[in-house]
Image (tube, rainbow, N blue to C red; front, top):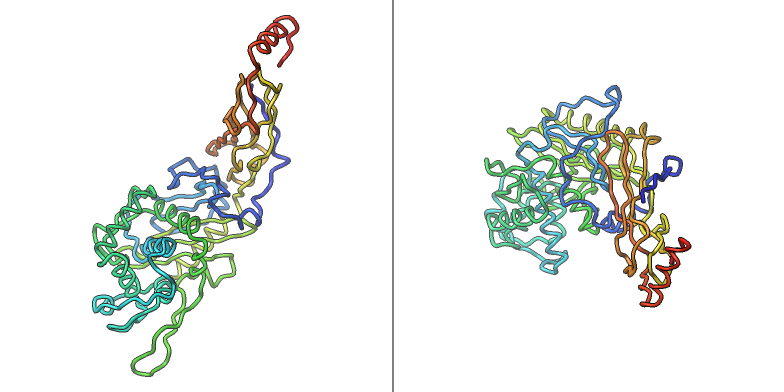
Length: 409
């Protein structure tokens, strides 16, 4: 049986309450580890801002829908955006009780001498893990990354090997790490698509630590000449623009240009965007803001059905009950251009009648969402409860009744 449902008039935005839930529960494990390459929805070219970034991607956090991409699978140096994976590894260690936020970690000479952006860890001193996390995320401290890497794996090289193992498990197919900082290396690379997938995993798996990414500044250490405390601001320009941004990480090297992995929320919806290859900090700030504004303005994520919502009833053949409620097996949501909202169709399909026995939660059909130019979304349709089969005499009587009267039992 196939039924076409009218849904355009009853579409609901993904609510703020839904966003506040555990993100993994929101999506019911429906998404792949990495956003797959997929056709983008048709967009209004007049409304789309121009950007000069060499690589870019913008996705909806809940559905993984790709709203925009440019060279998203092209290998690129991630520079300090590599620290997103370094932080993920640290958060995993905290989760697994390998580290505690108040642990004090030793500072090696190698970490102390590390060039580039620094939090200024003291030579042969000890620094609290939470301070190192803030130094790594807020101040982009290369020295902080090495202290953490050496504590967890013995050396930065061994830590990078662990980063690659975790990345492969996540499905980051075009990523390879050679260090914990993003220091230039020809074998240290990723893609915009992989960074977007990694950003989703940070938010999904470690929401309790994600708040570090929106911290505007951090004070650590003292200037040796003046004795004044050293305060450094977060390099993410979007945090200062009152646009809902709450992360994630900037990056810059001479070869890669200026990059940004960003995330922002508005009205309960989250967008993740990755850019790289800008020629200046000004372009990074201005174009990333325009692109994220466009993603929120032109697209919306609509929840058509909620997990556990009754969608239909299926007739049962030779069961102790004549029918069983069919439920949405998970939240049924789709991201699409707002202007195509009235063209969204929902279709349910299942065999009828369903032969008994039926198990609770058994998939009996599917819900399919479709709209022009938008990748189709399919969600299982499951039985609310179990239905036992009739005994022999009951089955015989039901068969006779059906043949004579067309009755359904």
